[in-house]
Image (cartoon, rainbow, N blue to C red; front, side, top):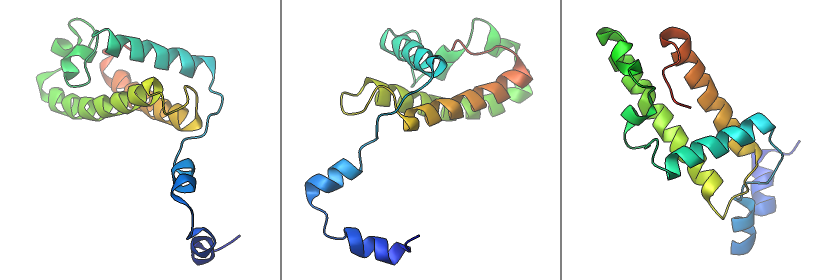
Length: 129
């Protein structure tokens, strides 16, 4: 395996076009569950059902109010991270410059699912998605 210095030397004279190509996300298959999920959240965002700048739109009706007041700060902080990840996922999927299915997109979805699972294990089915 080559060390970092030799890799740098090997690629230091890449053309601008080659650099752009190297920075692109490669297409790759995703499972049906990931594909359906990204379609669902993208639809929810584009139709205004959820708004990544208003985390209150993420909750099922009455779910936030059911959370103990002392726990709401923790949930609010988690929602900021979830909102950011939702925005990245939707932007990636909706962009014409990125593939609709890619390992990078699948990984972001997996990360979101883990965050959601941790919250819902403690507070129940609180999120719309």
